[in-house]
Length: 135
Image 1 (cartoon, rainbow, N blue to C red):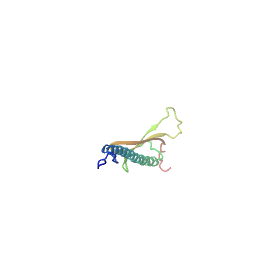
Image 2: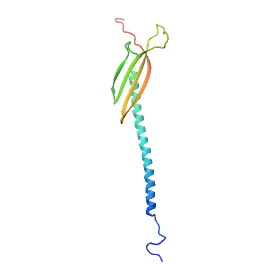
Image 3: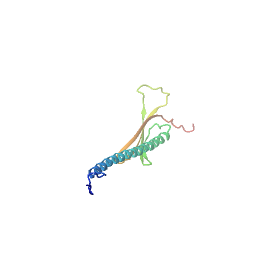
Image 4: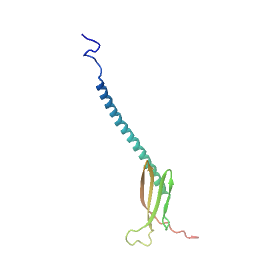
């Protein structure tokens, strides 16, 4: 005898469906986290690249430092920047004919969500020769 609820019914039980949906949900969650992390990484790389462009423009804006040094700061394209310098000494006596050098510190920082990120650079630049009137 076979009735409407025969022992040989085909299909999935409710328990099998719940297990399949739970596995699919976990897989979708992992996929969402992976794609979200990739998008966040691309955004951070773009912010660092823009900061590097600001830093490069700060460096290219000066080829020498005045004898009093540099201490400047400002904002550009959503980034805060600062440039300062100090006389550079090698620790020994320099040739008096040598051009004095200044160590120049440059920092670009920006707000990424709730935290500040920064990009720093240090270089040496010559001291600008004083302008002699009429010469």
